[in-house]
Image (cartoon, rainbow, N blue to C red; front, side):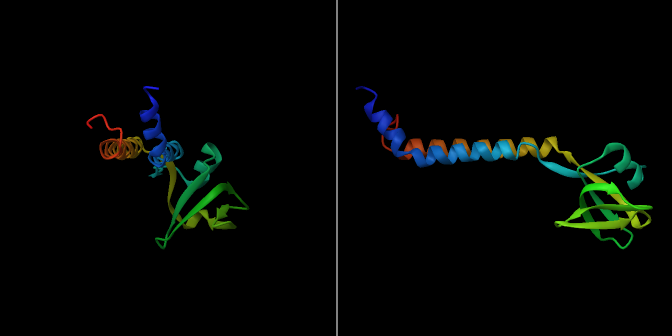
Length: 136
């Protein structure tokens, strides 16, 4: 069994392999980094009725912000949605800015490169420090 020691070395280093696998899964879950994008020249009512976003970040006239999940237009000019698990509403006239979540290509690429660098570094360290290394 010429491959016996190599197989045992991989088995002994299985925590490292599990960590690499976990990082890969994390990358899959975080594959799309998102950022808030301020919508220009559109009212909150128009945005919600035409684009039907999953979430909106509303900036009120006092400067406070609220994120509404599943936003919809309620009675009159009220924007309703779920905020922190509770049904909430904001008067459209009190909203000075509306933003929607968009995929940020730069952040996604940066995250991928960062995680890939960490995974390769861990693999190199594990190879160089463990038994069965090619340089021994």
